[in-house]
Image 1 (cartoon, rainbow, N blue to C red):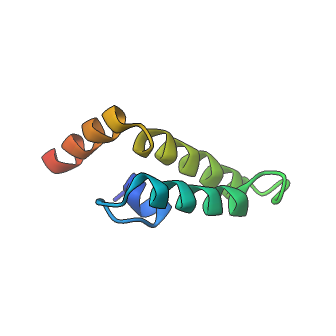
Image 2: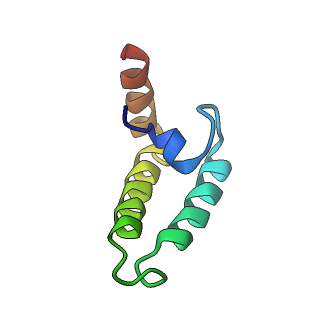
Image 3: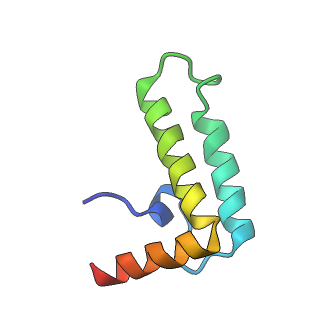
Length: 72
């Protein structure tokens, strides 16, 4: 099973925007391509973390995502 965006960022489903932003910044720094040149796994994680943040940081996208999770 794929990880949810919440699991990728290491936050709970009821996390507030500040918690999500802080988790994103920490992981983005950890996996940033400039810090990990030539590391394909880190690059993939960086892209996944960015995708997760882009959804969870936008209220309407997050609401849609939560509805989809609840339907599964």
